Amino acid sequence: MRVTRAGIVALALAAPLSGRASGNGVALRLQGAVEPVRSHPVIVPRMAGSGPGPGTLVIVHLAKPGTRVKRGDLLIEFDRQAQIKTAHDRQAEYRDFVEQINRKRGEQLTAAAHEEAEVKKAENALKSAELEVLKNEIVPPITAEQNTLSLDEARAKANQLRQTFALRRKADAADVRALELLERRPAVAHDVTASVRARAGVALAPGVKLLRPTAGRDSLVVTPEVGTQLDEAVARLVYQSRVLDDWGFLAGRPGARGVRMLFTGPPGTGKTLSAEVMARTLDIDLLVVDVSRVVSKWIGETEKNLAQVFEVAARAQAVLFFDEADALFGKRTEVADAHDRYANLETAFLLARLERFDGLAILSTNLRQNIDPAFTRRLEFVVEFDEPGLQEREELWRCHLPAGAPLDADVDVGELAALYPIVGALIRNAAVAAGFLAATEGTPIRRAHVLHAVRREYAKAGRAFPGVPTGPSA
Image (tube, rainbow, N blue to C red):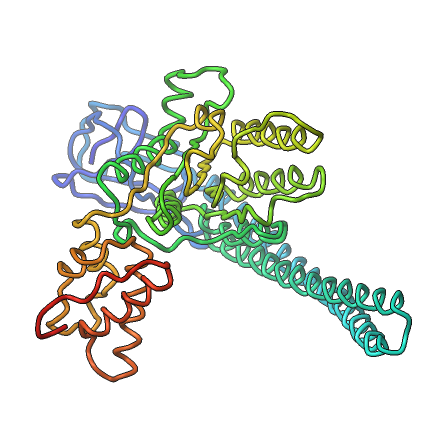
């Protein structure tokens, strides 16, 4: 046993340890010499009922460094009264958690009754509107049009209430679960993730989805250059506190925090999958923005929708992914009328919000030339996703034909990669389709199944099929 100058106990194999509980507290005795060394925390005695894990004890007696001790001498003693106080404090915290859970469950029951009445009222209004529409053939055209509009509004309101209340119930359940976890141990980040995700979902605008990423790095096939850029972007987020705060880089500069990236390349080359993989690497959610549904023709609505998107992304600590971003981040135009002036104001708004966002924001586009240069100057990374080469295509075929799938010996992934220069999304689709064809026939996956599926993908893409390989198996 050795003791540091700070009084932290550390075990040495050469020193036998004994312990006893005295009337004044917990005492440890040993044989050997007390010697100051580097500190190493150890599990110390704790009272029953004081909670899981090591206790936090107050040292009231500690042998000085250099003291010679023999077996049975007192080395260290802890304050028993402090232990009792700690136990009482934890019991009080436990009772408080139980009270919070009971109160939350009571609120859930009351809210559920109110929500059920609201939904019932909306459903009754919907039924009345449906009955009125049945009269459209015998009422004046204006009345018929009003009936149709009323039906649409009633249906939309009923659906909105159902969705909102369902999300709210998930959020409440997540809150209760988080409290139950906190009863038994100290809180950690994962304990409240579900609650944050559920509550963020309540506020999501149409066209915005908060996803929990599942794809790992092993499912992503990209060139080494692309992989290096993705790794550097993740590292920039992980170490930004050290570089910006501790080392003082970009002190006081706006837009110093966060990472902004542009993914550009043909469809199906892995842009969306890369965003998902990065989110999973960072162990956070992915907020996917459907740009076509966020942009509004009404003045002020687009900014309102985008402000909500950035707010949810910041609150949920999610990766923000704008798909087909050129619709939002496109080049500004010469001002010819009020519409052009308003469109440029939208672009300026986006520039400001993107600069203030301190998380990971990814813009994805198939056409880089459509992105406003003012945005690209503010991006830390521009990642080019080219169509996969021969080596990448072969790796993609191996990735999408699982090891557990019954693959016939006549399927040659090298041959498929050489003959069919298609992107990863089409390879994935063809591999899955071949699996279903084989399952339908009750046979292993044969080359004929794969070739049939590839031909279909070429037809769907509007491209000429290169033909089948020559040889007896074709």
